Length: 95
Image 1 (cartoon, rainbow, N blue to C red):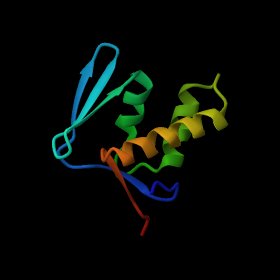
Image 2: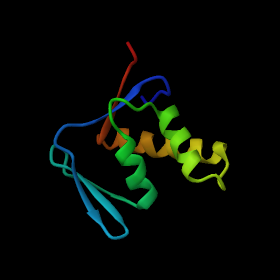
Image 3: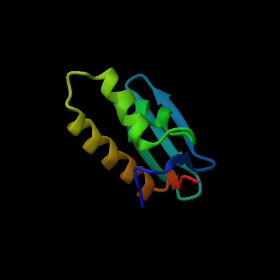
Image 4: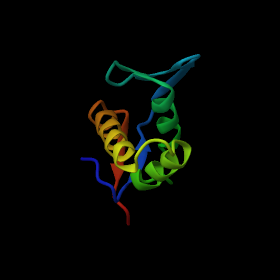
């Protein structure tokens, strides 16, 4: 399960197809497709082994100062939880 102390890792073989107004993710291993709006696409780009949810939230907060940190945190963690449940990302514990 997603936890704020781990690193986010994109699952192997995930395909990203960017469009004008967002992007699509495709997992060929499960057949799942997920549409990402522009903010979702931004969050996806931050999903790599060097990013924790906390660092991602801080970056998004700096990009969207008009939105409360609490709202961004809730929305971002829910989005990451959804991506994990759909098997697009996984969490790796810090060593």
